[in-house]
Length: 197
Image 1 (cartoon, one colour):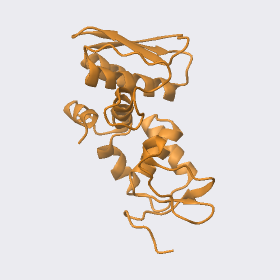
Image 2 (spheres, helix red, strand yellow):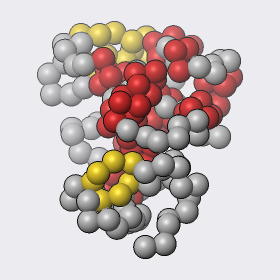
Image 3 (cartoon, rainbow, N blue to C red):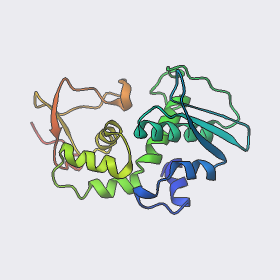
Image 4 (spheres, helix red, strand yellow):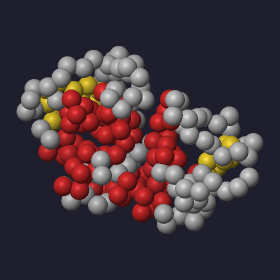
């Protein structure tokens, strides 16, 4: 279980509707304030005990939620450190020690925790875009974040238009997945197995 999932479970959260990021931030000693920001989506300023997370009030709700969760990730992993992000990652964006990657992973697990997310997707017989939108709505997550989580779950297989399965590329950006030229949709559950082709 990830640090974000442990935090959620310690708060008794077992339903996506219960994931109140502002309450979670407050529990961790951080106050969330929404205001127009220029040049960034969010930032956090704090000392060892308390922090203020400012989030861009002009962004859409799902972007604001991810930004808040990302800053909570920095608060969890990097409290007491001085970090500046100007739209680029520190070091390799796929490196597990990159502060931005750590905060992104924490945010993903806080908004779409596997212990709630996986039981929901395992009930799905055939996935389509409407179902993905419904799942994203349940978690108040972006469609993109939900699709990435689905692909990374290894429960569904993305099939490119050419018919070859999407393969993992550990050196590629975006969580180790190669982007297909075009893809049809997501196949029925494959339970980690790639059908013979």
